[in-house]
View 1 (tube, rainbow, N blue to C red):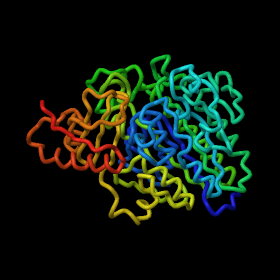
View 2 (cartoon, one colour):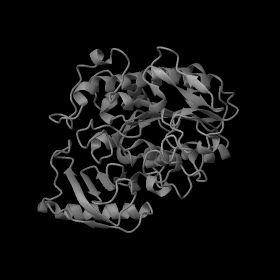
View 3 (cartoon, helix red, strand yellow):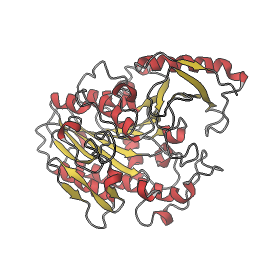
Length: 449
């Protein structure tokens, strides 16, 4: 049994998973029984959001606690600055063993097949963000695998193939269980598990659930934001749910292993995703937009300090996860981290002063910014500025939604003069966050419809 004072911490991270795919968030099909049980034992965050709805930038936030624009990682295929402090480096300095298994997406930069391209090659040690104790990963897992074939690289750069006929999430979890079985527990461990599911398979242009998913989940209820819209959800949603059901089964396997090893009572599991999917209904692909379909994510934490089957409705963000890692390990988060440790929301220390909004940076589809409160969604864009620019000196109002009256974001109020005061208040909030994120001073112009 683990005798360490500080708990082990497991980050169970999915890719492109909407919040409403989970039973504990209202999904009617039996897709996530293990997560639902974990929510009954731990803490569920009803209003959890990404702060950057695209893979690499969201991961950069999680490793540093800074907004993606602060590290320069506001687009995919961008190198996480090698000299920046990261959660792995900080936790390792403070007595934790740190390990990483899965998709990394923070090593490559420059043109494909160039000297700095590691999309399909082993990630060099100095590009691993400080995960020096255990490494089994692929920089871009969707480039080195499909649902039933592929490989990752171990710490020595050797390929490790998925067993023939083994579904990718199952094979990855096999390796997670192997990791857990081989710990000596002289130190507490921090294990970051980064799955690719339920992300679409790029080269096949579809979602790939386990065999039988189309039949198993054909009776799904259409999410309100997708209903009556084109997109590609009709052909993909059952497989999407199949991916998530597989992840849930593997979450159950991990929790069972912790119990078998008698370390479950001293291990915190944090479950969340990098962003959701709007199934090509809002733009030409799946995310990179302000709408809840791609920004609202599941977030459930269970373990020491996170118990009781509680549901919290405060606005929380991926930017809050890095300080939560550290605080959970008895480490004071550094001042450069922009979020707030969720521990302090759960234990009530910051409940009265917790922010009632979250800030979202948008890139690759546009250079944009958004703010989300319980009632309002307000988003701006930078016309004429490259989508990968990172910043702009001028933005124009793009979207305003009243989420209480219009939860599926179908009635854009950005040009309605009746909401001028609301837009003014949201504009002030957005500019405040831009300053917090150390962005250049900017002007937000009114929408001229």
